[in-house]
View 1: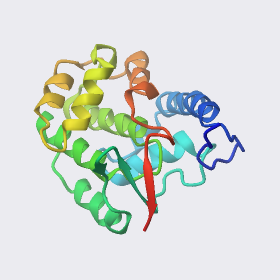
View 2: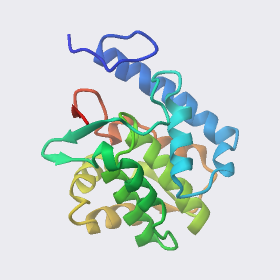
View 3: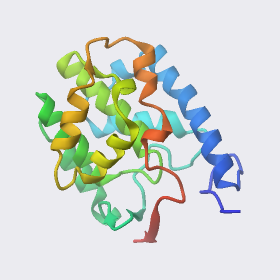
Amino acid sequence: MIMALENKLGITSSAQLALTEEKISKQKALELFEKNILNSLQPGSFRALSEIHRILFEDIYEFAGKLRSVNISKGNFRFASAVYLKEAVENVEKMPQTCFDEIIEKYVEMNIAHPFREGNGRSGRIWLDHIFKCELGMVIDWSKVDKTDYLLAMERSPVRDTELKALLCSALNDSINDRELYMKGIDASYSYEGYNEYKTSEI
């Protein structure tokens, strides 16, 4: 049995943790939507992303909403060093977000920073949709985004983001208060997340 990431629930199986994590984070995401919590957060700010992450994962992980303290990599790609992570997210926060291209570029840079130990994908997509909603009066209809295409586009986005832009632009929708559209982006299968997906190293 592959050991799970340390968690508040005492779950030791990574497979069981993944199932439990998805169930709880979806419940919390729905709470974010139905209680209009997002409306109180500044779109595009790291504080907004941190608060989203905290709410989604506070019942599961001690690190919910906190910058990671370990270095992580996926395949041959290493995300921002934990030593410079605070500076990295502050720089991303300052990026403009006045049009579609700028918003996607900001999203890509925050993904490269990968501020949290786990749960970056789900919290990041809520953060992205919150920016779109506030800045452009649009959201992503995730049901129109092929999961495999999205993951490949995200993987390539640090080098070339045109594929990701084309994919998400074609899925823009003005139904900004549609709960089903919102919840579709919470699906963990859109993420590379999971304890077994990352390699970690101490600072």
